Image 1 (tube, rainbow over the protein chains, first blue to last red):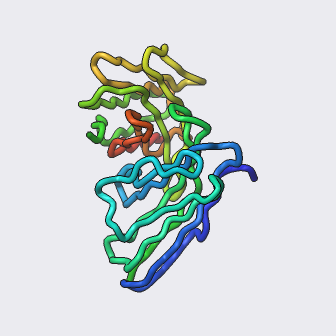
Image 2 (tube, helix red, strand yellow):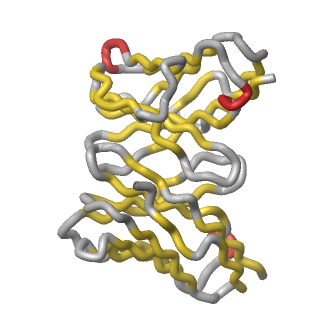
Length: 113
Length: 108
């Protein structure tokens, strides 16, 4: 399968714990995006990378959220000191260039108890 | 800055047509359309670029009016498989901002 993959698919954690998600984009894609989606809403932009450079981070994003894309390949999204409001589906997408279609991974569903 | 979609929900019988609209208050470089089924990731339908023409494949097509900063998705002769939530995504500075979605239900 050469699509976008995300791990883990599900994560249940207790409030205050740190969690890390991984995204493996389509291999030749330069751009990688992270979104958060809650029930009944569209995907909400979090951040994106061009190769290893993080080009933009949503102003709505707390300092508890950080993302990396070392060597321009896979990416990780870390949430520190999780809160119940962080419960959501976290989606990763990749594209070859800007103004290109984005291919989404299956997502990681986070539940914070 | 989130695009506004209308209607919020549509119920159709198989074979009927539907139009979903997406409007933005900001100048747009491109509009993306995605469909998401329950419990699945969004799937790309089509992209319309500034200065581009109307696009379509099979019985789904879309238009992009740059001056009005609006896009419309046209679904003709709907099939049961068209059911899902449709999102438009507007691209300005390299990132996509998605609308709140339009839920489409096609009944036999």
